[in-house]
Amino acid sequence: MIRTHGSAAFTSSGVGYTVTFSEAVTGVGINDFSFTSTNGSPNPFVTGLITTNNIVFTINLNTGSNAGKFRLDLKNSGTGIADAAGNAITQGFTGGEEYTVQIPDPAITAGGSALTAMTTNYGAASASQGFTVSGSNLTANLIITAPNGFEVSKDNGVTYGVSTSITPVSGTVASTSILVRLAATTSVGSYSGNIVLASTGATSVNLATASSTVSQRALTITANNANKTYGVLLVGGSGSVAFTPTGLRNGETIGSVTLAYGTGAGTNAGVGTYTGSVAPSAAIGGTFTASNYSISYAAGNIIVGTATLSIAANNVNKTYGQVLAGSSSSTAFTPSGLQNGETVGSVSIAYGTGAAGNAAVGTYTGSVTPSALTGGTFNASNYSISYATGNIIIGAKALTITSNNTNKTYGMLLVGGTGSAAFTASGLENGETIGSVTLAY
Image (cartoon, rainbow, N blue to C red; front, top):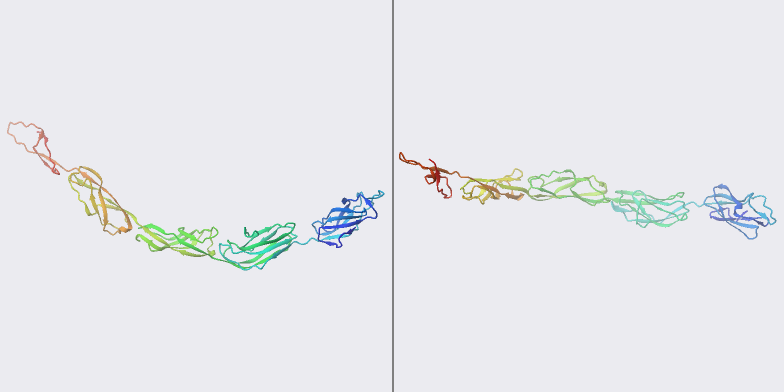
């Protein structure tokens, strides 16, 4: 049994043997032969058998996927091989030539120009750079792993990750473009290291990255305007969420800031806008990392609005017949809402229905109208002033009716009755008169 290929060492899967019998035979089949491993663990198998004269046979083989040495043997029995006279072959043959199957090692290749330094600001990926990878005789996926801070893509930048995987076809990875960049989530700092190309059984390839830099991102924290009414005291402190950040990346948040209040924070600060009087600082908490940002703080304004001041006119009590006259300097009112211990001097009072002398006894709701608050220590511009009316309450006037003395002579009879005008009235108002009274004696 002679090899059909001259070299005993072979890397291809297609080899064969030439088997020559001493005379023409019949009954030769592929199952009449077997393989003997003499080193390693080869796994060859017969793919075909050809003869032209029944003396010389060509047996084609596939050497399989494992390395090692083997030879082709003719089995000792049970072959069914016989000569032309029908005499069965009496023995096998084990003295044929050997093949050495050499399986090539898996190999990974990187191509392209050397990578150069990359730069970016935190929160944005850097511009990408590219290289190529290929592989041969691979038995597992080709894995491309980026060093810390970087990310890689095999689909021209559609998707990026810390690693990516390429599946070989029949052991081969065709030349594939790979992109690498600094990731948007990489913290501020300098980054370098090797991109590792690896596959099971293959020698890993390290592709160096140049020292690359992620710089701080500008972050502005602006205090919200603080609105208050006159007389309210603003007190600063930590833990405030009254701010607006601009420049945060990667969905990050800030927990709180410290606020300090300047001019306009006091209770006696007049109505108006106090520009730049809300100063933020010391941003903490949330999900952001302060070292990734260059933080600036922008002040907000204190806006003081008017306090509500209500002036309620006091109720006015009078008796029937009395006339009420208005005044420009009345103190007959009650203020509600004054701040900082302030006072008011006087108001103008106007009287409506019920003020006249002939207004009947009763309550005249809303007939005392205050206005034009002046004087005191308050400043009207710091207040939103409203006026509430009071009532005129008229009580009965005292009226005394005194009967006249009656003179008679002895023996006369006095008889009482209605319709008498023998009386004197004291207390009538508005020129009013009484017609008569009833007298009883």
